[in-house]
Amino acid sequence: MKNSRRNFIWSSLAVSTLTMTRWGWAAGVNGSGIPGSPEMIELGKKWKALNASDAKQRGRERFNDNKYGMFIHWGLYSQCGGIWKGEKMEEGDGTGPRVAEWIMRRKEIPRAEYAKLAKTFNPTKFDADEWVAIAKAAGMQYMVITSKHHDGFALFDSKVSDYNAVKATPFGRDIIRELEQACKRGGISFGVYYSHALDWRDGGDSGMKDYCYHDKPKQEMFVNKFDPAPVKFDDYIANKSLPQVRELVANYDLKEIWLDTPIYIPASHSFEFYKTIYEANPETLVSQRIGNGFGDIGTPGDNVIPDEASENTWEGIATTNNSWGYKSYDEDWKSPKETLFWLLENVSKGGNFLLNVGPDGTGTIPPKSVQNLVAVGQWLKVNGDAIYGTKPWKVTHEGPTGIAIKGTEHRSKKGFKLDVTPEDFWFTKKGNTLYAIAMTRPEGNTVSIKSLKGHPISGINMLGESGQVEWSEKADGIEITLPTFGSKGMGYALEIIS
Ligand code: GLC
Image (tube, rainbow, N blue to C red; front, side):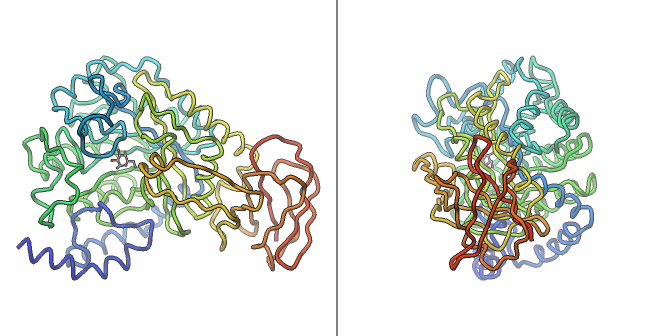
């Protein structure tokens, strides 16, 4: 049986690569459904009907217009800051990524011992309105917070499991409710992350035994092998994961639900999640990590700068240092300039950018990350028209700067050196208006934009500056004379009207 299923995977791979290489829907750790199997074809049709509905389309339009959001990883692990019993997570043996929310897995902390962290979870500095104010000052238009990460602990009140912020901690407050309400007051969209297929407390072996069709499991590093709950994966889905997702979509106004880490989840389960969310609110968008291709929002991957543009609905996701959860000793912050670079790389290619902060155990977002985010927010106050509500143009970028970052560890190991020149321009468009965005200002006041050659131009403005912009056509592009900058700051954006 195992072998014939495996052969089927191989013979159907050609089909799956065809659809999967449309990046943004990249395969990876994507569930155990067999591409091309009768079951996948059948479920795929049902998914497509819901995904193509008018309600989902409204959800996608709102999502795409928002462009920039705040991701928040917060939970019991935030109290550890990447250190367990005096030892950093990089020290000693350990399996899995070195990101702080993985401490339970890396240090193989037994479930009962880890649960003691709930007894000390009392983040008295947490203030939902303040977090929303920071997101807004950063120019972000939505927020997505971990309502339950792989450690199984929920930040919302739940009838399904008492292992949550209201019932198991001295804090006793529903953090998800407070943030949902604060986002509403602040006028930004709200969504949650929920680790549906991976739960080191209650998820058993995450389906490895029942649903892994490879002789050697490829995703073993995800799974709790040190102290797994003695339950079948299907029972975990039926008794905790799906009921908690039902609670979330029924009780909170969610614009987005970021299910994560599908590894071995079968297609029937992924589809059940999708249908459940759709029935509660058909406009709520679901991340592709629901598994088996049944998402609404693609992603190029954790801390990945995508190579190409895509008109699919997608979201680049990145950290402000090199961890999602709070890591007390990681000071490798993305500077405002680097942050702006990531934003431009994602938005010019047609995506959103969801940038993460990791508040500590007291409920404080690290001040350095706030400072960097607010600096980009200042830039967006002036140049936001070139970002929000835009779509990709036929050219995404011109100029010498090109940086490949292909994952969280890639950046942390290689470092990040940004050397943008005044010849670098990123492009976006809105209706008949084209935007050319530069991250650095030239020495003199002339620049040349090659990709504008032949583009109909009736006027050019510089966002935030009132001075006249002159232009003339040259052999290799459009030469533009910029006005004297009245403002300080990083770069500038030109609004080119046809
Ligand atoms: C991965 C990690 C997780 C993090 C997420 C963010 O799934 O397991 O820790 O939450 O990526 O995209």
